[in-house]
Amino acid sequence: MGIFCLQFYKVLTGTMMTLFIPQACYEPLTDGSDITYSEDVVRICTVTQNLKNNEIYHRLTLYWNSISFLCFIYCYLLELKRESWAIKFLDVDKDKSDNALKEIIVQEPKLDKQMDKLNRLYFYGLSVTSVVYMINILMMINVLHQDYHSMSTISCFISFTLLVQMKLYNSLSIAYKSVKNDTMLSAFLTEFVSFNVLDKDYISDKSNNP
Image: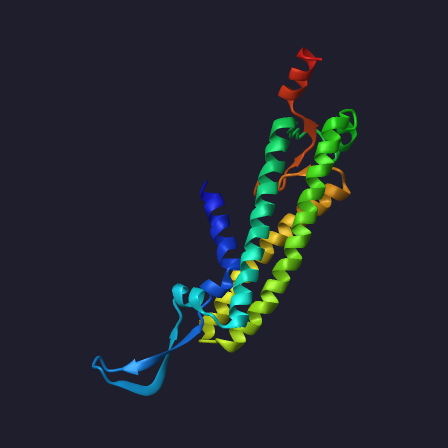
């Protein structure tokens, strides 16, 4: 649960950058009395101010941020579905090679078709999400150029995007290898694991219920 929350936070801040990256807001300078001076004070915008910014390009970027975020959520749901399927029907046998599943699963056409479908959906979903996110970054660069506040603007932008891009790269690598090699690589375990045999419970249930 903790890892999921961390991933959610990382994707939220890394996609909804219009809200979370420090930007410049100009506020009237006052001395606490009713007198307002003509000069403006540059402050870091609050999340609420960023959300309520009605400048057209800012709004469009915020909407695209939201689309990017939803794409990531869709990929996470696919990831969960794919991993649950693998845990239910497959297993890991360290005595066999990572590619052993390719020869075993052809004997189970139904499972083979399901695995191929899950792998393709995962790969295509990540591919679309990558394109959407690259556009997201380009749109944000223009926003930051207009509303630059300080070096914290740049540092947050770089750190947020790097974290998300690392996630995208790792997931795309897993999805591509799974599709190309007709296998099932785990996207959740910190050490890359390839499910390479059928699950013992599945085999037992099938034997008992032919």
